[in-house]
Length: 405
Image 1 (cartoon, rainbow, N blue to C red):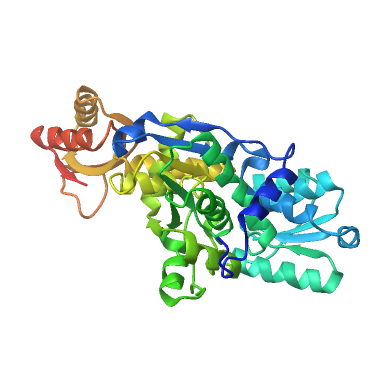
Image 2 (image 1 turned 135 degrees about the horizontal axis):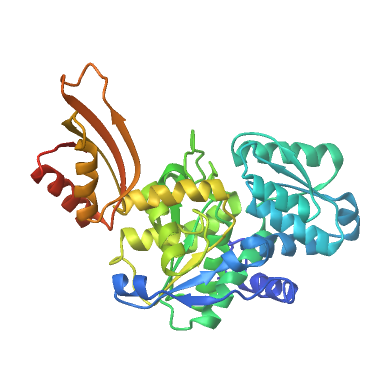
């Protein structure tokens, strides 16, 4: 850890922990019996979704602003964020008596915008992705003299996020693997500095959404590489280029960076809600998605960092539907039946007997593709899983219906 290539030290993380005393909570470490059975070893959740402001971001933001001089504080601070860093900066600035302006992407969830304002910051909307918003905030800093608080690319921010790693080692000293989501890389870098400084035997695994995975090509190239575009439901991971400081740390200390699909993210969010009774946003659920995708790949005990829980209710509704479909809990199909009185009632009776719940039904009787005495029914069903989906389709076929899935 004395390597000059590492721009953040263990001592810096320890100093950040003292700075954050009485400000950031030591969040709970909760066991997951379901994931433990899948992995074959204990799995725990580090619940940063229950942190003040709903994510780990307060740690880095407060550490950075607390380190400013009186003159810098008087000039105010400016930040850019899709939501979690925005709230962290807003609260940290408010606690420290500093004026804050926060730039947020135009598509940022409304609850995150409202919460940022409620914490006392002035909010400005700009850009479609965080990288564009970052540039706008940096230009504002140059024009006004406000201090730019980067969401991940600053040693103080990384050190603050690293306090999560210190807490994990205290709460679960037997840990063998820590899974942590990566956007710009501040959290993963900070956790790696803390953990590798004290327990180099513990593996730190970064997790990225496949549609916003800038780290794998960057690590292959040996330098931060910008993606041409990012597309993921995990707005906390919509970062097209790794930060310079986090990248150096991740390249040196993080054991592996893996990617997860959108289906895996939505399934992970659903699992957190159903099994653990925890509201987690997609970026925060990425470590759980990695466990679901490759349960045999990680040595236990495992700690999965649930980095945030700030999710737009409308997005949550959409993601839950997606997650239930990915888990085989929804079945959509079309089928042909005779266009005669009682035919639809008979179909519904068959579905009832096989215990399939009809969520939506469409009945088409006039279509050039249909025969003279035919009708088509479009069904959206709630089922009990993939095996039940197959049973429903098979039962309908055996009852004489032409099923189109």
